[in-house]
Image 1 (cartoon, rainbow, N blue to C red):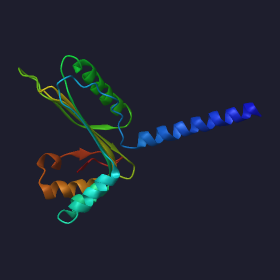
Image 2: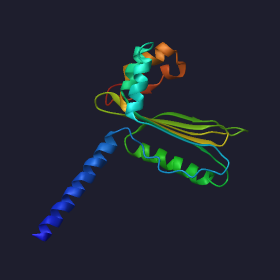
Image 3: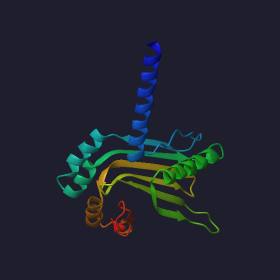
Image 4: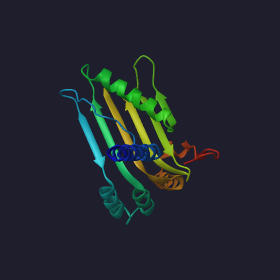
Amino acid sequence: MKFITLRTIAAAVALSTAAVTVHAEKSGIADFGAFVPAAGKEYVEVNLKPALIKFAAKIVAIDEPEAAELLRSIDGVRVHVVGMDESNRGATTKRMNEIRAELAGSGWEKVVTVKETGDEKGDDVAIFVKTTAEDTIAGVVVTVLSNDGEAVFVNVVGNIKAEQIATVVEKLNIKPLRDLKVHTGGKADEAV
């Protein structure tokens, strides 16, 4: 009896882990891990949970109902800004490259890549989007290694419809986002 109970518990734990893994793969949550701040450099961590975002949506709804609707579809926002010097540059850059590789290998689509090169090394930017079968954006990840010695990691999680973003982009006249194309699960790419 004891053997069956331990086996049952082990099976339940394995199934739970598998269910959590499948949910994480379908969600727009990206695991950034932990960062080591450099002494005397800026380190910022922002973690907005659904309650605060919904509160902001209520405030915005009066003047910008489309933006409020978009906010209501967001479940979380995480931002890390890591100032770098020689003590943490290697580890931070390595972690960013690992995050980018993990995203690319787990169904996220890289939609923007910017690598400025030349005499003065510029910014290195990669933006990833995770879409679902319902033609929604489950998550957006922005990673930036800036030429001024900062690494920026942003993860927006939600259930965002492309038309919501298009409406807000048009209303707020955000030109760079007008031409962004997002793969929508088998259909031809659509402009946001």
